[in-house]
Structures are given as C-alpha cells and as structure tokens.
Length: 487
Ligand code: NAD
Image (tube, rainbow, N blue to C red):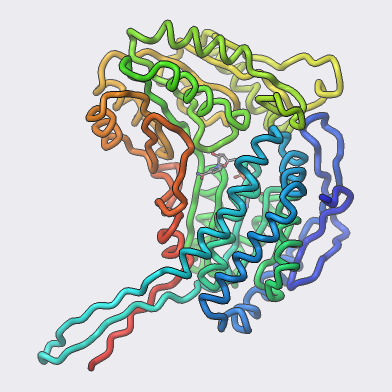
C-alpha cells in the first residue's frame, strides 16, 4: 500500500526520516493525505556524494547486459505493485483512475523496458580512415556515463515523467538524485521501494523530497558535484535552472511549457476531429504539456464544429477520480486552481465569449473544498490576447476560425513556445505540407499523444532544449569519447 502517513527520502540505500516536513494534500477535498520528509541542503549533499561514490564503485563496472537486466527487474517490480502505483498517482493528482491504469503506470513500466531493450541492442560507431602518411586508422566511439544526474520532475504526469528520465540515465550507467514535485511525492517513493527490492546498489538511485526555490530543488541544481541536470517543468523554472547550470557548464536537457495549437481543416473526418480535440484539450484536466489550448477551425466547418465541441464539453463528467465513469478530476492543487481561474477572469476582461464553462462546479459535498474547475471553451479573442499566448495548463481551449492554409500556419507559429501541434485533415499532401511548416518538436496528424518511445521528444523556443527518447536519450545521458587507433 502507499505509505500515506509519512513519505521518506531515500539516500544511499537508506530511508531517511527528517525533522522538516510538508503536507501532501488530496486535491479532491483539500484534506491532508500525509506528511512528507523534506530534504535540507545537507541531505541533498549526502545524496550527491552517495551517487558519486556509487558511480566510482560497482555500478560503474556493471556490463550493459547486467544493467539491462536490472532495468527489467525494476519494470517487473512496478508491475507487481501496479495497483499501489495507481493508488499513489490518483491520491496525489486526483486524476481518473482509468487514466492511471491505462496511461501513467503502463508508461512507467514501458520506460524501463524500452531503455533496457535499447541498450541491449545498441550498436557502436566505427569508422575506417586513412592517416596523413597514408597509413590506416580505425576510429570508434565509446559511450561513458555523465556521472551524477539531477532529475527534477513536475506534478502533471509524475511517474511517467520521472521514469522517462531515470530509466535512460541508469541505462547509460549514471547515478541519479531525483527530486519529484512537492505536489506528487507518492509514486516516486514507491519507485524507490521498487529499486531497493530489485537490488539496485546503494547510492545509484537517490530520492530527495522538497520544494524548488531555496529548497531541495535549488540545493540539487546548484550543487557543484552534479554532472548534468534533466528537468521537466515550467519555462520560467527552466531559466532559473539554466543559470545555475552555467556555473560549472553542466549539461542540461529541458522539457518545458507549451501553448499548443490544433488545426481542423474543413476536409477533416468530423467525428475523429471532434473526439481528438476533446481529448487533446481536456485529458488530465488539461494538465499535459502537449494539450491543445489553441484550436483553429476552417471557417466553413467552424459553427458546426464548435457546437459539437460545446455539446461534448458540457457532458464531461467531473467527480471522484475513483469513479470509473469520471472524465475529469480536480486540478493538482488550490494554488493551481487559483491560477487557472485567474485566466478565466482575464479572458472575461479581454472580451472572450464563454462557449462552455468558465467557473467551478457545485457538488454540494466535500468536493467543493477540492481543486475542481469547469472545462472551458473560449472564443472571440484576438491572437494577441494573453489567454491565447500564455500557457494556462488547465481544461481550457480557445477556438478561432481561419480562412487559408498560409494564414493558419502563420497563426499557429506565432508563439514563443514550440512543443506540439495537431493537424486534422484527410488531405494527405496538405497534412504533410503543414506539418513541415510548423515550428514544433512534434506534430500529430489525425491523432494526439501517441508516441513511439524511440522517437525524439522535446520542444523549441520556450518549450525546451534538446531531445530525449530512444537514442536521443542515450546521447544526452552519455559522454561520447572517440578512440583513434593506427593499425
Ligand atoms: P515547475 O517548474 O513549477 O516545477 C517542476 C519541478 O521543478 C518541481 O519538482 C519543482 O519543485 C522544481 N523547481 C521549481 N523551482 C525550482 C528551482 N528554482 N530550482 C530547482 N527546482 C525547482 O513546473 P510544474 O508546475 O511542476 O509543472 C508544470 C509545467 O511543466 C508546465 O509548464 C508544463 O507545460 C511543463 N511540462 C512540460 C513537459 C514537456 O515534456 N515539455 C512535460 C510535462 C510538464
């Protein structure tokens, strides 16, 4: 079972109870679900030193096959405690239990399995060349671990995004100090239990709980003895962490915010497009970095499309995450709800029309003390409005008509972010043409969220630096060293 009462840090193979604690709040009703041990600077330092020692010790000398086997044992361990992980994700985030069962926990397992398989089958690079004097040389490339990697993860997909970084870091022989979001400490703690049971050597995986600024997050990202930082979170936090990483010229990989656009052409498969936009705007109460917050619809289809979107939005079921029929749980926290509601207010001030939602639901029970908001569709705002330019990260999208392909490409690209986009069209060449013109790290055509874990993932502009996924992750989590041999 999830240890609700007290979640501890895990450092150098030991469970650490600290005096400093913070509360884990259940977003469904605002009640305290448990206490979390907060790491201070000294404990973060212990974790970093433990990781460095483990790196120099037995972990550094494990073969690729042994590391791959260990990653599979970690995946087995998550599988064996599948329902505990589901409960942990639901408790911390309030997401529908079905989502945790079908997305979050399976992807946590898949992250370990896919990187285990990848390192087991990776080939090495070799070049045969001629030296200046005409002699023959061969060149090959060694991949070495970076050393100690700081993993900082957000609350929106806690297990999925943590394991997305921990798995390839370990696969390449690094040691890790992970700091999950203070909002979602439970599944990370379970992961440490799984690591311990799987026989991961002491110090290879360390878990420190705590907040970001002037707390565990900052203690970790400013620590002089870490070798790299991999971070998923807000773009503003990315800026702060990048400044810290400049000291010591640390490697960074950043997966940051988005203000993603979807375009629906008049030739789209209507039902598939409506269902797709519903999914891409409202999954996880809009708290997915890949969600569409801007939806552009070709004018001949606009009225019919928006009417159907409204009908479906008004039918979304908000409620207890454990209810299998629920479409949307609460937002992650009251603080985040205040932020989303402030954007609903701003939309009013900016002159938006509310097609759906715009407020909070009224349950008449304990859920009124939870962090729920209504799913919301806005219309009528200019592209310059803050609600159309800034990431809201809630169950909200703005719909807008367009007339030409060139116009919509320009409007979709008119954003400081560049994470994801969706195209809904049955016109094959147009879909390819538009996809090639968009400045985003990923473009979906007639689908959303589907990912092959071997493909590169990341964003441009404010959406991040670098790509992770498959061999791109292996590149980030390793230092390449070329050996040139005269033969
Ligand atoms: P956040 O930036 O507030 O926090 C993320 C993590 O950083 C947390 O663990 C937090 O404690 C830590 N942190 C905060 N300030 C820090 C500091 N000064 N130093 C070190 N660590 C610090 O983000 P969030 O609210 O948890 O997550 C939501 C954001 O994440 C959204 O902007 C969303 O778009 C983005 N996101 C992006 C991706 C992607 O793949 N591009 C995926 C998921 C979420």
